[in-house]
Image (tube, rainbow, N blue to C red; front, side, top):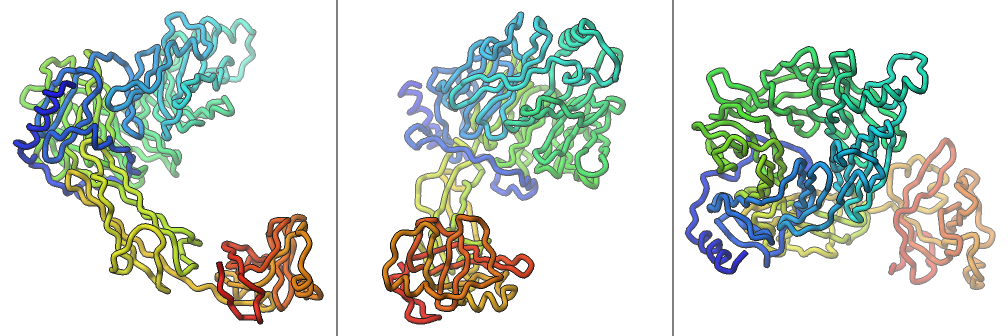
Length: 611
């Protein structure tokens, strides 16, 4: 981008007007896990409006829209598949090649001729599908190899861009929908069955990939009128039938919730995977169905008096609730929620203009994202990163856009050491991490404000009082969105005990933290001093304290000796905080924290200073 253009963008921000959207997102509270996206560096961001910053692409592109509300870049990059991965990276494919780009369109890596890289002899060299896993570290690729009568699923590592063949399906019983009837076949008939399957199968419909498991639907079998939904474990290589008579898969969650349209009921959606399948009636024929937090569906339906209803349906009960009615005539088939940004992307026709629109809760405003008047520009594929950074594909090319930022940054508190959420030391280490959900503003780099029990504190070592401690952290991004996180941590004081106390009543200490002073001795410890050897000799060995492994050491105090999980070479005076594990009539110590004593304990119950 030229320097003149940068100055023009910056000047636009000074004369901008505030968009009528407000920050409240409570009307549509989607509790999906937020996708944390690393914001662009401050040096690369250009301010366009009060709530809008952009990272201009490295290529000189056409500005299709340039206002304080949104910026849209037109590219010449043609593709058929599009995904936005964590960090805002764009994964694009063009049926034969895969490319990974930064939001600025800097190329990270590319795999040319995926079929050839996977060792597949394909006539046209085209892949059947690509889909990234949830962690976005690898991509699954489906490839039909008709010449060798097989279907190959390969993976592409997004760090090294190496292609590996994972599964080869070359038997009728391995193919989705194939070989279900038990009958004898000659080798020729089996080969013909595979060839017929590959030729008639137009494409899979993958909806989920987690690096190991792929979920998809096949096309109807020859002589049958329905398809099936399958789950394929890439380590086993054998598909598992999830649903019969499924016309189209809609969504799949990591815990096994499957959403699909049945073949024999176009105006129904089936939710299965948890108890009895739930059938949901809908008028949404063309729009895809979105799955919210694994518990709710989002549907786009025609309203009775015109317009488009966004409907939320509880997966378990089937209860329906209308989120809003938009003045849109259904057009196209895109319905994509962006929980982190609180927006919903949807295609439709408004005032005679068909296009892609973005809607935010509590506002009557619709933001039109496709400026072209040609209906061919209605996107069939839309991806979003946090709700403010988005991209879509038209028949012309890839488009990249930025919207105003109404999303607070993600703030998280980290405390250590803890045991089951409780602090057992008077001081703990507090760390505060901040990540922004979008690229349109980003965190301004200011130190977050932190209070502990109402008093100002700074990340690092903090002191806790006995009982409950309230820790609050706040951070603000450049757009003025404030994040507030509060956490209550209980500080417990371990009970001072001896080995004899535990041996007498181990059940009394099973659910408590205990503190002991004594000598830790590994079985391969070196030469001990005369003083240490004298302390260890003639100590009672408790018969109900059992040994876990041959490499166990010992813990010895003034009252006796017990088996203890110590390093073979460990020896020395220790202050130990531990739990007591009881199994039948036996017990053992499970240490969670050890510190070195400066000197030998003078007597039982005496607690010398620790290092």
